[in-house]
Length: 270
Image (cartoon, rainbow, N blue to C red; front, side):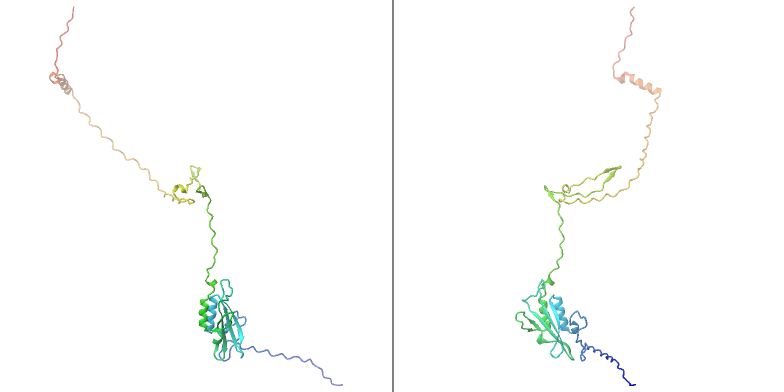
């Protein structure tokens, strides 16, 4: 029998996983690669740089349009470029204003630094860069704050109230219904007061009068008893002797002062 070697399928060797690059500098420890899902596009690279932080804050608060670009220098070092553009009240770019550009690069052993020869502002027409420091750029941004930032917020104005119609110099207004009062079980409506008759302006209502405070009824007082009149003193009794004296005084001719004529006796004719 011949010995035959059985061929076996050669299994591919698993490839070694590529080592993730270190996002931090080995000499200064600053971040070289942006974080995953970084919404600020490179701002995480420069979180510890004062010039970058002041410049980004001025662009945001002044309402400028800006963008952050990630680039690579010629020698492979990471680079971040900030470009800011002034806008008008409608958010459109203002061509009569300068556009600023600031470049930051990573220097091994030092960290991130602003490149002075690549930082300043330029006109859109000429494109010539005029070098300025980051502090000068912050001042320029503040002097050209967007108009929409300073404009007041438009709030809807309240609708004016409809005035009542006037007819023949008088105001036609519907009087408010007043509660009906009852007197002895019968309904009685209160009279409507015309505001013009009270000297008030047309269309106004007279002030409500406060009800008078209720006073407690005083209890009925009994009439005071009047003193009875004292009986008049009776005249002293007149005796018969006193009456005789009075008659004699009346019949006395001296007292009467009259002449007494004696009457002749009557004769009887036979």
